[in-house]
Image 1 (tube, rainbow, N blue to C red):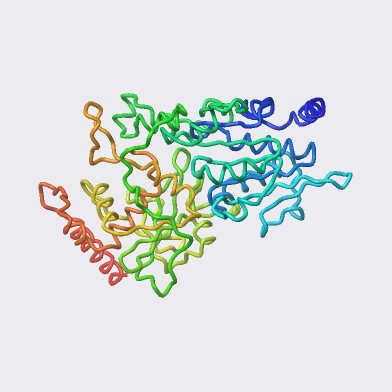
Image 2: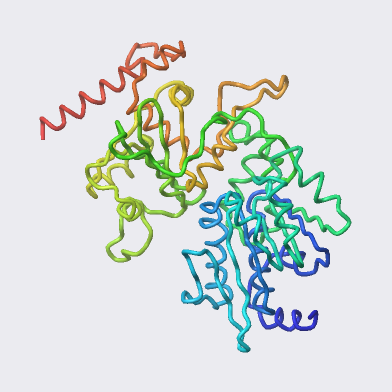
Length: 453
């Protein structure tokens, strides 16, 4: 078997791999635990390794995450991309998307089955047996479910996670085992990262430059930069609940879409929101880098915000709010036929927008993967000397929330914040001193422009 694997690796030397792939391939222990920071390539490399094993000998390989929705939109998507683009072996006829498995056939009629499983389906989790078990983001799950799957795994178990907990059952019950190999990785172990992503991660490091820019955070740097264990304290929206979908259309009082523009370093975040009774619902639609504003006639397939809006059913009637600091982008999308307007900001607008959102019960759909990650990391700054939380958020993990604030300030009544006695600084000349005044000004301005035209 060792010789056979070595021959296959030599044949597949065209596949670009990180050293994490090598760690996984060389490990002889029953259990592997991969603890790593953001963008360390641990998930991608482990999937490369699982495919590598599965195309060399018939196996039952189970790939899991806490929810099937998360599994389908992350590890299953990576699996298909790697099998198709790296190994050139993907065959859509072998992919059963309704039952969430893929089969690789051998010439002798034997096969490897890659099965994707959500750990929230306890009936399947308790009854599924495999040769190799891989649990992605294993710290999301419960030890009881892991233990049930582990007892039904014949050969190898692989876990990976970001170390965002100081205490966890993985640390106490899995890593100390004699038959466990522990691997720690950071973004420095990934040779394929773009400079923009590296800058985004390193912006968390508590250097003087990053502190001045408001992006520094020691805890987030430990977790996502250095891959060290740390408890993430001071979360701004820790009580948002996850739901499967939006409420029925007849129960929605208001609906709108928001955009936070990005390109190289920052992502473009587009999301849909609705108000139902006294609750807000949020759904991530787009979370991507490299999007231009409108479709290029000479290259219509190049990804653009215009294309993404149309793909998500957003037409000229849908109300859209975006960052007023991007007037050119807003103008281009207006000319493309969208009802997009700038949100008006003033002193302390971030704190006001956060306070406004906090006056509602908030729900976020479970397919909003990147937005949920932001929710779990969007936090208040800490005073360096006292450790006390400040009323200023860290300028990181906020693309979704910046856009969400824009729409909330423009679409929701501000009286709810006034009842909380939230302070709002005024300008010395008294011009547009409150959010209500800015909103009234904006509505009058739009009405005037319609009458004039």
